[in-house]
Length: 418
Image 1 (cartoon, helix red, strand yellow):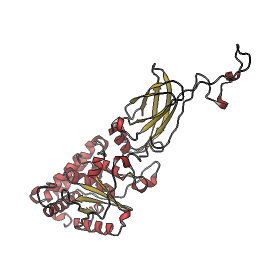
Image 2 (image 1 turned 120 degrees about the vertical axis):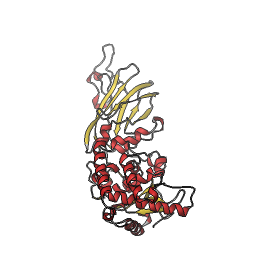
Image 3 (image 1 turned 180 degrees about the vertical axis):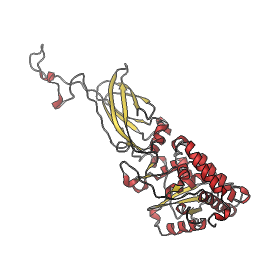
Image 4 (image 1 turned 60 degrees about the vertical axis):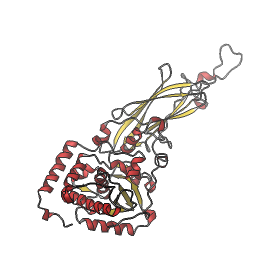
């Protein structure tokens, strides 16, 4: 059994660090659209209306008519005009007055000499609800509005790159439309994870950890058959550390055997389409892995982490170059973790998976190990994606139930030795 306390530094999950550095709209220009219309006259320079240069009837000399200045509007959308469902979902969960980033941002610059009062509406037609905000500012002021409209279930069922349009409409205090613009955007597949450089956004992997999914509950139903007294108690805080550690090892072994018995094995499938391919990856939701009986290393990690979190235990995702391991805190308030390699589920026993994680982490420099403690991610406001996002629940239930029944019907002697 491998445990670790301070050897691995946990990735900081303060929202000011994670969300403040977010590359979604609100941090750097991605798409710009400006309005400088002035009742038929250009703004300045070569775009001046020719009427500006015609002497007025009652003037003794030629006079240049000063063009009237209007507010300007700049729109920024997603990450390089791409919206990742994981980030869009998280942004929509933030309170509006606490947002530090959004799916869409609109920057209004009031270049006039009068106060401005605008009603700004943003939506992605066919994909999201409409969000409305009011902009009130004085002359010469500039303000950025951060929008995070709630997306419809359609986005979270989308499995491929899709084209869409962001619609922005602005009305003045009298209800007149003063600005209207549409911006093209690409919607990433629901399973697309954007890690960022140096795993900057790794904490968002917690969105793939779904403890309340019905298929995760089914794993627990199977796992208890491999546990003493058919019990999976999680942590029992009133017991001493040594007893809790022994219990955690026993429960982890039972969960491993259950998932192994359900036929899950390693399949490399992380291809995704769109930009930032070197720092993006397609990740299966836990019920997809159970439905398809397939999981690569990170798929397996979020599956196992979902099961442990369901039990009230504290899982962690451990990232090393080219691979991932699952960690689980061995006891309540303990600094020790049990690690194992979920990629071995289909071809080796639990002890071998523990040994593989020990070897892999042992030969990796500490600076190259990133550890995301899911409890910390939850405290930072990173929650599971809603159940309706994962997949077709009817198909998932049917396939997982078939796998469960098949595994339960086999003689125990046909399972790999533990």
